[in-house]
Length: 505
Image (cartoon, rainbow, N blue to C red; front, side, top):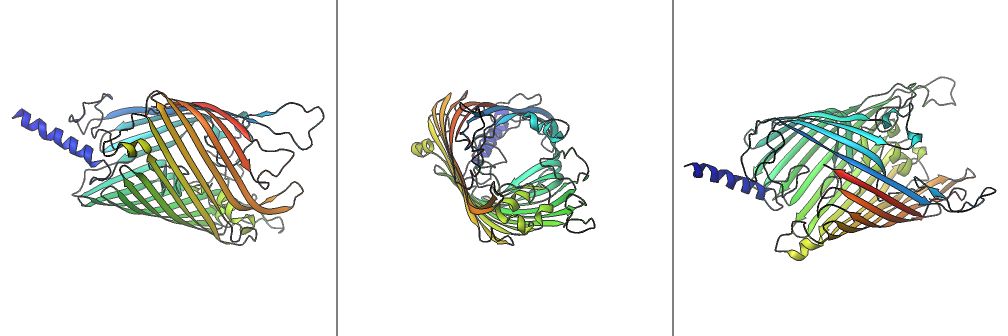
């Protein structure tokens, strides 16, 4: 009789493992590998045997995090009119470059503390960025060690075929990235952070169909206009506050086909009296309040052994968006609310009002997985891992004549050739091209094509085929248009060397 009680538990565990594989009836969990055992850690962090039953009510403490240290040096070009006595070759650290860098450089550390059981879980992240001296000190409080993410998640028992999740605290949430595991090559088309909460529900419509719904609200409070130390958030925006409401609905079929609709509305309140004051009027006036509307449709297809393909068309509508703080902080690259989208795609004369559309697409695949099919390939072996991404965008409406009808794109490709369990070669290509207008050294407005490309070749060391630790040496060559590299007295670097390492645990 004892054997009869044990066998069904093992069978159920094996069935759950199969349910997490693409093509099965259940969608994969957030950030969970399809090959991960479906059993939670035992109290004290001990790993149970695969398929062994564990106490669902046990309280568990986990400590994780990430350490990284990356340094970069650029070989400078000779200025057009060097000062007297100038000789040799200049080395810049950090290098003088623009555009999408292949690696986010810098030294940083993060510790993640997690405590809870299967119903309630608390999470806190403690972060420290060791930046350059000019970004440290009394006036850059946000650069110091800080707790930026802290939340509590409640997952009550399922009610029939409905599973619920509630999350409250300070945390980021991102949506619409076409990559395989969350962020992808260029990130999401919508990312929200601030103080607030999320309510989510999953409804198992049938054995192979699941409906998902989510609603969230996030607020970024205002720092006083006269507070000279900036803010404790990512970008100093004194005198602005924002509230973001966002809603999401999705469907997954056979854990292979996914469709999700993402909607967001951000209200920005401008409480500035002096920072936005119009000098042409004698009285001190408030700036305009602002709004951002976002609508995106995320589509994804996952098919073994061909990999995954994701595409997300997205539309932004801006109304005085420079008055919206960074509650929405990512769109086409990072946004700082509406500030960067206005600067790059709407123009300053638009005053943050206009419309932008884009399509973000990415394809990820493993060559060894394709060649091994129909035999399985678990990643522990020689491989060629490839990710290709492309994002065209268009300015549909703006009052800035230099950006009316503007368009552009960003593209990227990363290839890792895994040669040995401890050695890989890496290849990266990133590019950005867009209509733009810059002010040259003479103060004249110069419209044209802003273009920045870079190609990299690297050598990476790691402790295992799929380990999360990495040490890499990288050489990168940059290409610019004349509009991008438009100051001959301070030319941008073309050659950059990067050396660094990261470890996640």
